[in-house]
Amino acid sequence: MIMSKLNVTFRNPGDVLEFVRRVEKYPYDMDLSRGSIVVDAKSLLGIMNLGFNKIVSLKIYSEECEDLQQDLKDFIAA
Image (cartoon, rainbow, N blue to C red):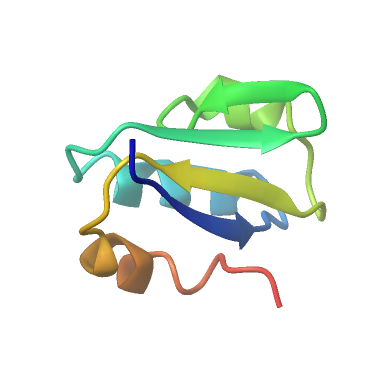
């Protein structure tokens, strides 16, 4: 399966809420992971368990997701 990967970070619960609001608009399956923890990228509580101010890996299970990547530019880790 083709997938895209991005590194993202969340500073606070408000960031997580906004992130989930944005990704819910897209039909793609997505996972977030940090270490051995993997959660659904559309799960508010799951993402909260990953912690704040940490680099988290976002996997998007689609090859055509430029629109989503543009929508998430505020969360992409430097």
